[in-house]
Image (cartoon, rainbow, N blue to C red):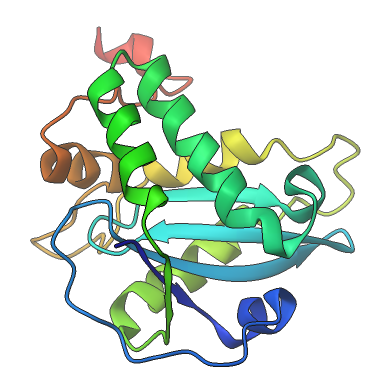
Length: 180
């Protein structure tokens, strides 16, 4: 049963009045955090995996409003797995999201700290005339070290790969040709 830990801002947008205490989940794709940010006067949902900090950004307008974010996210997750030749996981997403969803409180301060960092990293540059590419922002964050400076720093994409036993490709940087 997928669990979505909603921040107060996102729960208000979705009109979810009662959030329960988080439960222990069994499947690696069962635990997600959702927060809302406002960029250029537009609302955007930030959906972050609870164990790996792997992140998606979904503008409310793309999903058709806050209430449709989770259905839209399901499609994005399936698309990610299908685009990377992981049809078994795409089918798994269908099975998981066929069950009743649980909306819980956000009590894990560690992941919320990462989400605050991701929020700052996703802000557009002042005066940037180009529209924001939210998929590009998510890729950059998923390929950015978290806990940098500590001995246990990691990348969200590497942690997501390890948890699911898959191999989503890391993003090549503009300077990746220097290491080849």
